[in-house]
Amino acid sequence: MLRTLPRTRDYGLAARLAAVLAFTCVTAVAARLALPFEPVPFTLQPLAVLLAGLTLGARDGALSQLLYVALIASGLPVDSRGLGTAALFGPTGGYLIGFIAAAWVAGYLAESGARRLWRRWLAGVAGIAAIYLVGVPYLRLVTGLEWQAAWASGAALFLVPDLMKALIAAALAESGRALLLRYLN
Image (cartoon, one colour):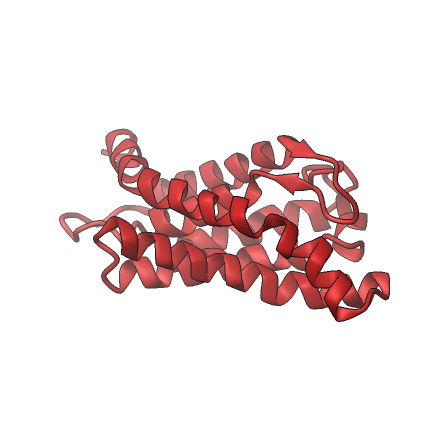
């Protein structure tokens, strides 16, 4: 757990699970902060996903998002539109699955030495790319849009805000770790 922290102590299973669950909940709350664009809404979920990876590291960050997607798959309406399982088969399904990869990528790069803000930001940008790499082709598959239209409505529209979310996540990652340490110690 918290592989992005200096290894000064081992964290138990309960502490790891609490941190994973906390970021699962943060992602669910971020889903509700949405602007209803079509076919993909604008949410704060990418910020939560990147923050999970940058704060918890690759394994636990991805686990927090896997748990989030599992909650949706089980029918809980924690996605942005409150659809539950149906969200995984609609236009946003690929983005939801991409959250797992994004948290892992951002976390892995953070673990690999992203000690400076600009490096954490680049780790976040790589996470955003992972979301788009899964989300846009899935959007195209589900909606039948051409590649250019899928990119325009599923990525290009969100690119600048998502880059800003990556910067915010990079800036908040250190304080997020400090906050977790306070409650885990």
